[in-house]
Length: 97
Ligand SMILES: [Zn+2]
Ligand SMILES: [Zn+2]
Image (cartoon, rainbow, N blue to C red; front, side, top):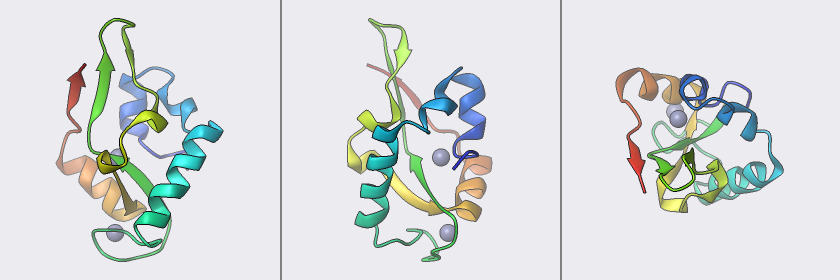
């Protein structure tokens, strides 16, 4: 859990600590359940993490949206391996809303 989105945490300031929030834990559990407790990429059930396909920056308050506030379609379950691979390969787009 603690290394979920490590790379983005550095650019989002305190974003990393939000991942310990119980609202995120509830959302995360929901997504993993929806994806049948498996990585959507390789079907592994080892060290599952939930990945954001987009990050939303809310212009009026000058802050990123809290991680649990995203639509479920923007969240997917990945194992640690696929998650790390994905982050090395693709940059998560920041979208201003
Ligand atoms: Zn995987
Ligand atoms: Zn991710």
